[in-house]
Image 1 (cartoon, helix red, strand yellow):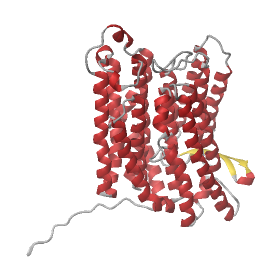
Image 2 (cartoon, helix red, strand yellow; image 1 turned 90 degrees about the vertical axis):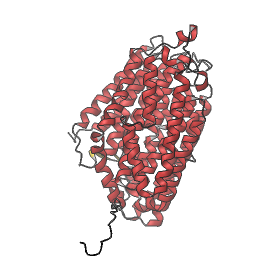
Image 3 (cartoon, one colour; image 1 turned 120 degrees about the vertical axis):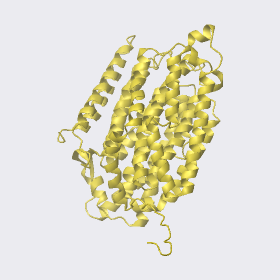
Image 4 (cartoon, helix red, strand yellow; image 1 turned 90 degrees about the horizontal axis):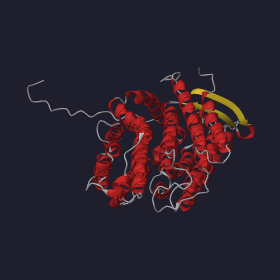
Length: 525
């Protein structure tokens, strides 16, 4: 089963679907490109699930493919997934059909998120779904690439569909947000390019140049070179994640993009940043990672607290979610760089759970905003009585965002918090403050949007409850949050071997527990 080119198929299927969707003739049959896109994404999901049955929990990189691509550079078309890559691929193929189903009418001509958004009657509905499929294919390629040069190429290529999704669909300032997004990402990518070239120089100096991850792991790189290479990779991944102080593109983007686009960016594309830190910073540059740990942990703590504090003062719901994600990504980076098995496992699990919970919150918020015609929290109120299903799901997904026990984000957050306290008491103490602040702004948001006097007249008619399609799109996320909240071990069984291998390569071990020994009393043994 491992000999079958599963990963290439998972990349090709959505690419072909994107081309077919884009090639459909423009006309009044808006449903056809939606059906093609949804069908393609479901086929991709089914193939990924089938592939998982052949995965060995302790087998390292699996479903590997390796073909020479550019011999002069030592570049290969090389694919493979371990525990980290497998979960990121599964998260991608799960969220794309949910986004397509949830945003079935979001890209129709004349459709707007808010009442005051400019309606565009000339945009093509099929473009949204074609770009979504293209982004799915390129994201899978990023998570499956085991050649650094191939990783860099598809890493940069993801910006193309992302730019057109942000700039083509959303609020009145979407083009400005798209340009800002692109500038930040390209700047980070250029810095990483210097590091990629540096890896080529290092590998060429040891003999035949190679960008294969397995070959580069076997090369001894001197600590000074590792520090410079680490800086190049880390800056790019910090922008992508994003991490303070290179985070400002994210709130602008989530405020202006459609909620479906925000799910694709925040819950899939941004995971590439944390993925890259684990795969390349720790996996290839262990000495550089240990050298930079104090600075990175400091930046992570600033992101955690700063993102939560700024989110507390936001009135625009979608902008609030952007700053909330900055805080959450801080937890992920903190878990990675405390360099313990609990922290690493918590960080990877956080990546998965954040993708599920934040996707659900964005989508249900999109339903709410379209009904109320505004993203302003202070202008809402009384929704739970007019739309009880919408209000109930909004509460559950909000509680998931604040990591309520019993929902899956709690497990990952508590693992990271424990690891932070093991690192140093003040590290954990600072991180814990964000939990309180997050509960504050989530519950305050729910109170201001859902409670209050019952809506009457035309305002009540606008706020209809969720229909079957909308509930169906949210149901898989709801179930996943409940199931993995009580039974996280299926995910941790995939995560733990990867984390153990990575920490062993870095050369660190979990701190030994300290046991207080009572002093012996005289005459007693």
